[in-house]
Image (tube, rainbow, N blue to C red; front, side, top):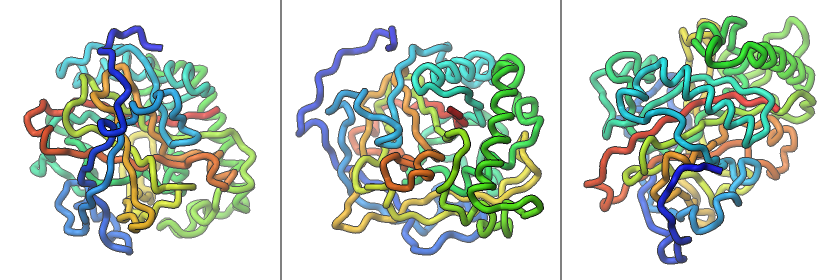
Length: 364
């Protein structure tokens, strides 16, 4: 457990632990057009707001929440770096100090054999900077490299899209992403790439993909592994997570996770079709999909949960994909964790949230 000194808080009462907040959903029953990324910068007309209950996760022991049962888990780790603005915006600090600390955390708390960090996102501005938004690559590459909180209910990838990310990696991935020397131990790099090969081979066998077949199907989400439901898989268990941490206590725009109305991952969503281009360590172009939640039907209304005044030593591991959840296919393991930031009027005068998320592959 964390050795960081934190304020002692009583468990919220029933009245204290629930509030109402507005969450934004994708309003149409059909997917957006390919690479329509207006949803990402808040300019899309195709969203609808719903007032839904939000509960404080502190009403229960935080150890009760596991990624198997809930799609997320709260890990405890003392803040491993100087969290000042200049420090976290120094790439060498994140790469050489923060990334290795997260790999160690995942090995210790989740028992993974190896982990590979895909990228990082810093959120410390109040609203999107539309002047620098690139519709072909919404991740900032100039200026402060900051993003604002994201107020659309979503999960990052459909199952086929997560697999497509793994399959798009090239043999020089660690060098190309600068996550090799000084970040990921050489033996872990070798182990990850070897297990990745075993994973893809096992998936192809289970999906009936034969040598010479195009595992990506038509290149637009049909055929190949995209049509496979994940059953029959006999390779190593693997998952993709977002490792989400605030740099200081959160008092504005906290992150919420879907905790009710999503039994057996049965929440309605549509895919946001994407073409990923020129990503470091990946093939030149590949098809992908993000997950946009649709509004809940009234009789199965959503309930969201958040960690009140989340501290820097309270780290959220949010799951995007889990091969074991799909292999079982019975809802006993959650495959993904829908999430969104939210805002209430009493947060208006609070300081802008400062947080970081790392996308990470984990293999057991």
